Amino acid sequence: MSTTPLTRENSAVVLIDHEVGFSNLVGSHRLAETIGNTVALARTAQVFGLPLVVTAARESDPAGPLYPELKEVLGDHHVIHRAPVFDAFDNEEFAAAIEAAGREKLVMAGIQTDVCLAFTALTALNRGYEVYVVVDASGATTKETHDTAVMRLVQAGAVPVNWLAAASELLRGWVDQPLAPAIGEIVYDNLPPWHHQHVLTASVAELAAKQPGPART
Image (tube, rainbow, N blue to C red; front, side, top):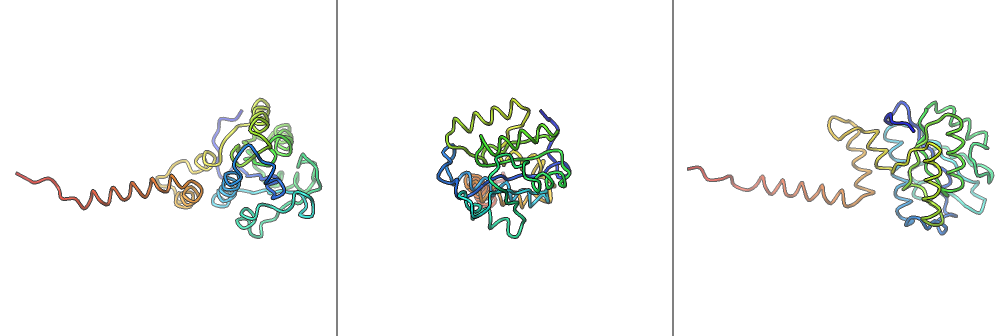
């Protein structure tokens, strides 16, 4: 298991099968959480300029198109549409895209955790990549199946993370980081309590600044 940090130079983000046809099948997380975290991960990749490999089934297949929220963020970013194979590496275009990215660390999320994500991640590990499984941007039919799949991947050598941990590892801190405002915007959009806490802190600081100082004797 890798202990060296994620950086802009060594990391790529991989999104697998975040499709509307799976929306009613994901029971391990609330759908809104899965969508929000997936979008946050994609935006994080864009902010840091990381290679972003997105794959899904053909839109005519039962799983249907990508989450519309993700599709909006991706814009005209290329999506690798593949036949219904579980391991995305069985698709030559996907395998070539991963190789072309030229990064040793793959930050991966997908639906379902126990099938397409797991099989693709295991192949990535077998090919020598360091795999980071973004557990809160993935999902399965039940919490048990999701957790079991994550345990399987961890035992195989993958690193479990959430999207915010991955973004924070890439950012390294809030001070003297030019990309901090952009990551902060993603955090505020996806985690309202963080935004509210910031507003509260700023309000208290503003109020304190207006108070008269102690009387001098």
